Length: 270
Image (spheres, one colour):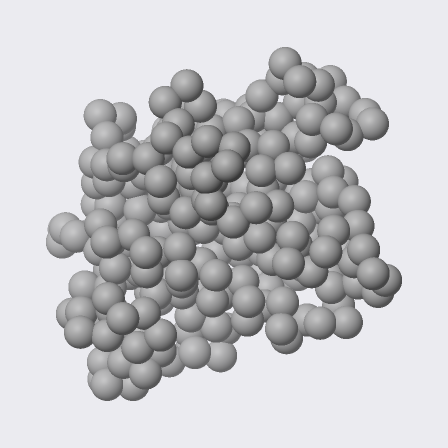
């Protein structure tokens, strides 16, 4: 998204990304390597998953400490530096690191718990080590290596044909757009961006703003809406509009998302 009321989210789709680890099964998720009974207490946080077939649940891990991603296999990214994200009442997110990371995990799980079309369970870093995780989300302080202004990227996987997808969130781009938010607003921003990119890995495309079903007074904003603003990102998101996990678009695309603040005092030149 560019600065100014007439500018919108920049969506870049790049053709030719080789799919990683293509599998022949269909549906969501791969069979976990550990006894599902170990996973059940984690799934019980969502009543819909409490009785679900956990072997067909997509397991997602969020990596906060940096590392590599299949989207940019030659790059090593730094972990998210929460000391750079200011709170309105003083201090930074680093002062509440453990609570922040847990709230992000819980909020994304709630978004997908409320969406019956797919079974998704987001695991903390410590829990993720116990299972064959399907999708990895890297949350980094870094920026996109080619210098573009995107706040997130994900392997776009129509029909959820493959399961070992990757996504990456660029924390420095989010920091540049933001001010000193409340703790809850920071939770919303990072949970919404991460859940949106997870949506692409599950096969969900953008919902065009002209076809949105949520108004300004609705309790939630559509998660997969295109052209989000930072003002919108500070509110809670859910799946609102009708979605399809098998749209008429070719697999193997890379979806990139850039969000800009309409009230920012500067422009990124787009």
